Image (cartoon, rainbow, N blue to C red; front, side):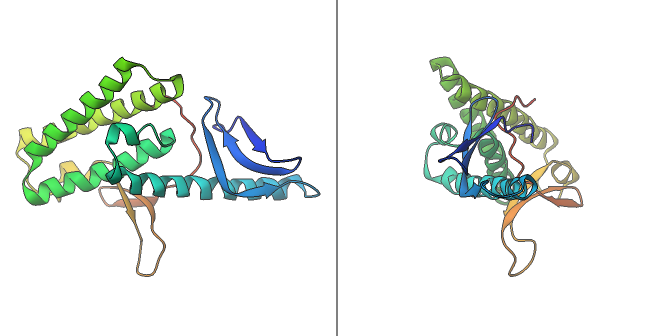
Length: 204
């Protein structure tokens, strides 16, 4: 996996963390044993551990989003979680703004969020966090432009094509009694998120 530069061991044979080329670290939910096991076996377990760890971190990021200031939240989670969890909440907030006819107020909220992030960058952050916040600013600016477009076109329904044609992120169960996961929608297409670890790479 391109975004994993190395793994970290606890003792001689227990992998417990993944390191990205940028220096980000994600801990596995359960360590992976390599001793006396074929490479293809423990590599398969490592892949499963990566998917489980990213899903765990993403769920935590989605839950934490509403419990702390957004600018603080963005510094507390891996970059991949920050980008995707923010998109989950953006999707929910846009649809709420449509339902309550509050798109004007929501556009103002997005403007404030961008200003808060730019303020963090001006104060100065460690390189890893600078990259995370910079990526989030790019995503937020696009999100603001989308909402501004709704206002300019006087769109009032979450069922309009201009909204349905956006990439929309939902944390939901695909059916009754199914486990909740991240799903991405665009128009009539719906597909599950893959949970491959992506590190903290530049996103434009």
